[in-house]
Image 1 (cartoon, protein in one colour):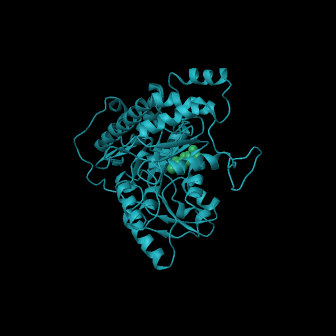
Image 2 (image 1 turned 45 degrees about the vertical axis):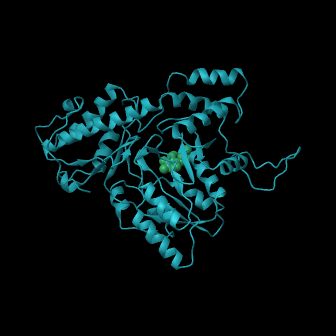
Image 3 (image 1 turned 180 degrees about the vertical axis):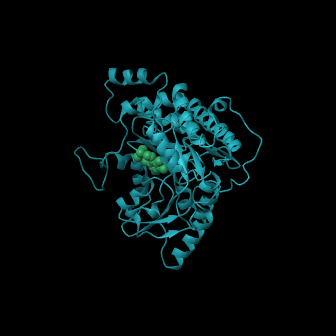
Length: 406
Ligand SMILES: Cc1ncc(COP(=O)(O)O)c(C=O)c1O
């Protein structure tokens, strides 16, 4: 069996080893030190945000955000349904209730219309939501300006889950910087990694100072250990931050590579139209720049001779190539089955037809060849096809895939 091609693997740059060696040589191996400070400065400068605290994970950042916004047991928190569980789990950590909001078709992210409906309905029932968590999935910016405006109207703070969208922008502004708080993840599968890690950013100095306090066990100022509040051990180690500093030096390169992956798949699947197939890739919504963290496809069997995303996934898996269905919406998860949901089925339809394809930035030509060979064999169900030879040429075929409206 050939070596596994994973969905998204780490890709180190040129300076990480040097920064780690510096940290070891200077004995800064705890969750404090010069690399922690530098990585925070790098994130602030890159995202043009006033304050940043680097943490042990993106999940920890969302949990801290819930604490900082004073979410209490029994409160209600609005959350995008189409996401990874880590966007929503911290609501449960607080003993609060998630209220799930469906996606809209253009960005696949939180629908402003359903958000408004949910807020108005909850208020009519005497419930004031404590916070709202929209997500920028797969690096596609949500309609975040609209979402923030709606939330401002009702005085609901926004925690932007930008775990997957570092580097993406809406009208030139980085995702993660629109809401009261923004969250990034540096998990091993993300566009840059610190092995595991995350960050909380905000323009509010007090809130990030409080985040640091809570993330280091909430130690009161006293010579002994004294605690008036519940804290956590959520800071990022100086070793991990050293990796982060190195990764920040090549982030633009990584984004360009992810975008090139997307274009390569797009050219490949465009060519499938010649064989009567119609595989859809997400567009880049107007005003946005997408980091294209993962390339995703939608496969409607009615427009693809009965081919489903399952067929593609299983064929890839047989050759030890990882692909994964789109996120299963939270309102459909057994864990959240009792949670209220406002929507029209958009995220469920996406889940029922979509697949994430291998999107690492360090895939070799041989690995690309293996992927296209498997995909070719699927098309080969119609006799004349061998489409992969066109894929590397980035062929853009004129013919529109007209039926390919989601
Ligand atoms: C949308 C989303 N939110 C939150 C997280 C949590 O980040 P972490 O894995 O760093 O805890 C992830 C990724 O893992 C994610 O994809």
